[in-house]
Structure formats: C-alpha cells, structure tokens
Image 1 (cartoon, rainbow, N blue to C red):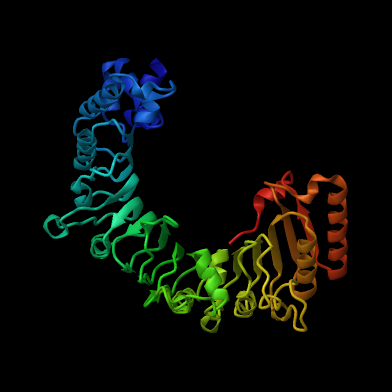
Image 2 (image 1 turned 135 degrees about the horizontal axis):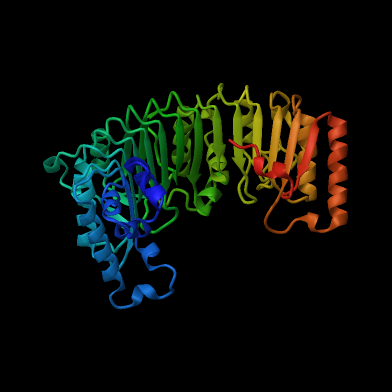
Length: 480
C-alpha cells in the first residue's frame, strides 16, 4: 500500500478512473489522502444496475433504490465543486427523476465535457434544460426508453452548445421547427447519430456546414410513425452517411459533395412493393399513395450521393431504384458496392446500377438469392435471355465477395455466371452461411460443392476460395 500511496496524485486519480464508482468510493476510507483523491477523479459512472448486481429481484426490495440514490448524493457531495470530465448515468424506473436532474445539473456546473445518459423513465420525464446551454459539453449521448420530445422554450433559453462535436440521440421526438433551430446552436458539430427518431412534422431539413458523420434511423414500421413528405440534406462536409427511413415523397435538396461512405436503407411495405412491380394493380389511385411519384423522387437522393466511394444498399433500396432507373446517376468515384439481397426483393435495378459504376473494383453480396423478374436477367442467371449478363461484361470488378453461401444449385449457377461474365475478375471469396441450414452439413455435399468451385476457378483463371466459419479468413470479410 505504501508504494501505491507514494505515486503522484495525477497517476492515482488515473488509476481510480478505471474502477467503478462504488469501488473507487471505497478507497476513500483508506486514508485522508485517498478521500481527497477520489474527489478529483475525472470520470464518474452512476449505474443502478451495477449497484444492484448481482442479486436477482434486489431492485424490488424496500430501501434498495433509496440506498443507491443516497450513495450517488454522497459521491457528488464528496467531490464538491472539483472539475469533472465525464459522467455516465444509467438509471431506470424507481429512481427519483428530480434527483437525477439534480445530478446532471451538478456535473454541468462543474464543466463536464462528456455526458452519457441512459434513462429508463416514463413519458412524463423531461431532461433538464441546462443541458442545452452548456459551454463545456463536447460529447452528449441521450438514450431514452420511451419517446420524449424536447419541450423547451427555444427563444427564451437561448440554446447554445458552442463546444459540442458529438451528439447521439435515441428515442427522441422532434418537432421539425425545433430540430432546424437546434442544429445551428451546435456550430462545430461533427457527428450526429439519431436512432429511433420520431418526426412530428412532414418536412425535414438537416443543415450543417460542420457535420462529417450523420446517421438517421427511424423506428421501422409502427402505427405512430409517418414517413416525411420531404427530407433535405445540406451537409457539404459530410464524409459518412447512414440513412434508414421510410421513403419520403421528395428529396428537394441533397448536398453531399464530399461523401466517402454511404449506407442507404429506404424501407417499403409489401403493398408498396407489389404496386411498384405491377402498375396496373387495383386501387392504385384510390388511397392517395402515389408510389411512382414517391419512388421517382428517390432518384434525387441517389443523385445526391453520386460522389461516394463506398456504397451499401439494402434490398428495399434496390426495389426503389428499379422505379427510378432513368434518374440513377453515374457513380464515377465508386470503388466498393455492397448489396444486401433478400429472397422476396428483386434485382431489377442491378443492370443499370452496375453499368453506372464504371470504376467499381469490389462487389459484395450479402446473399445471392432474390425475387426473380424478367428485368434482372441482364445481370444474373435467373432468366434465360439472349443478352444475359450483358451489364457485367463491361464491368471492371476485380474482386467479388459473396456472404451467406448455402451451397444451393441456384447459388452455384449464379457463381458460374459471374465467373464467365465479369471479364476483369481476379478474386472471388465465398463465405459459407454461419447460421441456419446449409448443404454443407452433409460431408458428401460439401465435397461436391468444393469440387465444383475448384472447376469453376480453373476454367475462369480466377482465384475462387470457399471460406468456412472455422477459417481465420472468415473474420476478415470484405465489406463496404
């Protein structure tokens, strides 16, 4: 103990910062010096689940949550007004929300720069407004268990977060005018992650000159969610873009000139899929959902990301592309294309997409099986036609990665088709499906599949490799 005590205060505080707050607080009883050291620990984690761990049902016992709250009060009182860099707060129902907000205000007054809030309260809870006038916050994470709106008087409070660079919001409900007023209050914001976001208006604009990374993810299909009529992105400095939401009716402005990486998941209902594939379906004009207008305007979004170098498209996004093929841009900078396939989603857009990627080098498929239509035969081996594979013959793809391979006859035919049709193909890596049924469970079938792939490789002069989950290479899948 003497050797440890002889270390410098700064080093001891650094060591204490790696302990849980409960363990670090216990050191204060060792000696007066240790009590003073704990007061200067720069990071703090208040987690009721850790405090109650490991006894099951302990949370429901009388006085247990009160003990946690009293403990948190004592810890903050012990630290006084000493500076603090980071607070992680994880609390759930049963903890007094007024105390929680008092703890948050405490660290804000002490200049906290990294604030992570995981709050599992009911829909009556509101964050303390002092969060949004902090002059020291650099990173802010707010993850709520149910949807909450930011019920703030924006004009009176004078919202300002001049130092904030990273913002993560989960299960937050925004009125659009609030959101559009909020972003300018973060002049140096570089990363914005919004998951399970609920818009309370139909026209959204994301505008920021400083933003470099943007992730927007809706909560999927819910009766409480309405896809926006329009959404615009005016983010010229953005380099990473991840967008998963219901298809908007329009994308008026998409300013993403410096984009490097994009992941796009435009979500559709099965009814919209059917209408898109069959324009003569009954009831198209009766319910006011103009599928062709909605899908056609989605072309503006794809045109806005045309400078991207790495692109990931979901199976639904391919269906959307199939109805706006005339407006699909030429992706001159695209080097890596990653496609997620689904057996009930089509590849109708694949021919025009591949033709419009003149410098594509790596093509990744998460699954090869897809819904067969007469329009995908230009790219795949599903439909017999004279121009089968025409869109592949001009491609410069050098590397092809196939994930989720199950060893079916249809997959093998697709692989053979790719080897024959891609003239520049040098490497093909095929990663066997790790979960679910495959034909590899039968050793004889595995041997036949492996022999067939070896023959394909020799005939095409391409390095074809089947990678099993036990292979070290399996963890190094090529991806966008």
